[in-house]
Image (spheres, rainbow, N blue to C red):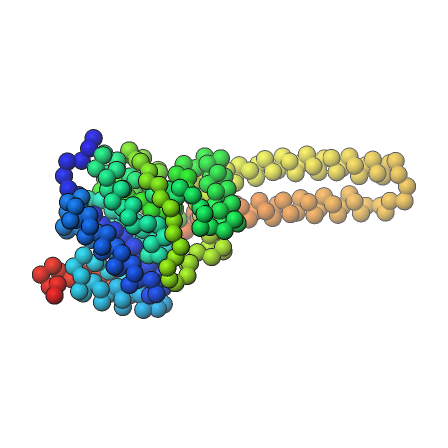
Length: 324
């Protein structure tokens, strides 16, 4: 069912050490917001929420200064660094507008597509996913690993939108449903699919970062990938069972080989193969299995403590009648 009213829009921008990028981000997003307001696509009380995730540079001071002169800007400062997903969730949960779009501060996800997302919402979609049409700006390694990750997740039964990250629109209905998920181990692109509702996609080409540097080196990317797998799939635990059977079969074959070697050949040092080979093999399998089980236990440990995902240290915004 198509929407009949003009919605208010909130753009949520998590920021971590983005002092070099913020000036460009301010101007681009404000221009984008005002263009949509002028076209009567969204209402004039729309806002942009900048969430400082415990930055160590002057990111918060820049956000604070902008919010004091621009009534469209709302600044949120977390008490310490809580990670991209928690910062994004903090921004989403502090909005009150009809629809919310999340986008990274580097603006590699083209903000011009926000207007297309709003159009899809007006057609009756509660969630609109920004999907990369191609990965020409990525290195071969990043493109291969990223696309392989989505395919592996789908094979494991995890419902993800292929080539979608965290550039998405969510209606108030979808956002209220998302807020009912209280888990500590956040993987929002998976949770967005979990809530259901009617959805559509908008394709776009990702651009190069204008300033600053990526906050997701290989180590963090691998950690985030594992977070998604372990949060939405028990396939690694089931794989341990399969691995156990495989190890048993291989061990049985090795036993037969050792017996054959002992009975039908000469000059074999007694006991070396029958002890060393199975010991090394089974020991490595056991350690790997314990590691996977330990990862899941660690997630359970984090969940049962039910600690807050973030704390807001400051919130700043200028009222319309205070704008010079």
